[in-house]
Image: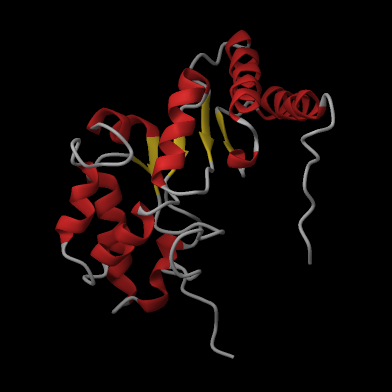
Length: 193
């Protein structure tokens, strides 16, 4: 199976894609979207694309419409997109270096200091504690797993209950917690062949 790509060089493509997003906002009355593979869109075009979505939603009375971008390339790249897109992008999905660190700390494989050092304003790649608290969506699982092993969090867990530790870290530390489908059930997979 091969994935189909949008040909971003085609004039008007992102305008047409924005129309699709607007249609679903109006039809489904949703309050936000995850924008997959945002890193592949040049910064200025990404800012304009997100801006038109936010403007449309605001005109419908959704002043706080939430856009979270999937930005592969690590914590630095996520922070760069957040800086450039500013208010047009609410948050970045933490699929960079923080996800495997969060996983390892929750499983007891790394000292908690490794995770909490990511919140140190003097050393954190993702910026100040304000950025981390308001603009980063923490995850244990993701369908891509850009960094680290491509396994669900519960795959190498010591027990089925270990997922509670990971989710608790998400809920009680800085960031916007996101529980990926199946995490709450400690789904592991893939099954041994």
